[in-house]
Image (cartoon, rainbow, N blue to C red):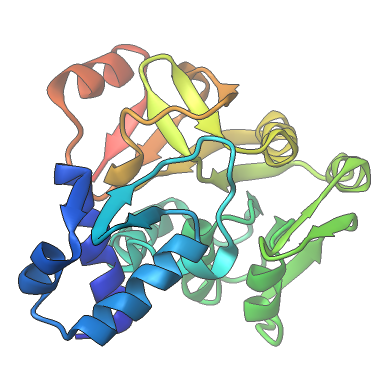
Length: 251
């Protein structure tokens, strides 16, 4: 079993029980004690779990933005599935804003298949992935690089975005409920809002783990989103709420 799979299995197990003993986790994953210990240390460093006296507890700190490398590994299969659905919105001769989220970065291979596509992003790693893709004209914002997040942020970034308009904006979030779309960073939210204001349509890429999850900063009302793409069917009440507000939901 690959490390990414183990990390996701640990988080999925803790989603259901919140607190588990390391012995129970080891039995459930069929791994050695040393392997589990290394995985838990990595999850603890990322701010996802805490370890105390042989027990592991899931924590969801609303005001902590996880590093890009961990976000890229988390729910990777779901993010690739979401990107595949999102690619159906793409066409030749489009201009698209793409945020710095790990979910949106999985779109890079689909961008490369289009002709005369313009991508405007504040995501450092997406820009690197598109380097050398001659069919895509890539614009990267200036601004301050947030260490570990792969994001370029700040007033310089916002001013840069004002030079463009786009057909689509692809973005992700920390959580979504019937009350709103939430982020764990006001700086990230400012860039996403700017992209939304300058494009014709906004598409939210959101895996199931973010359903019914709040953070301290509200990005927007759900009705401000044109389409939500996810990997699992949301609960019926949430699905009905979004559809009543003309939000297209794909999964």
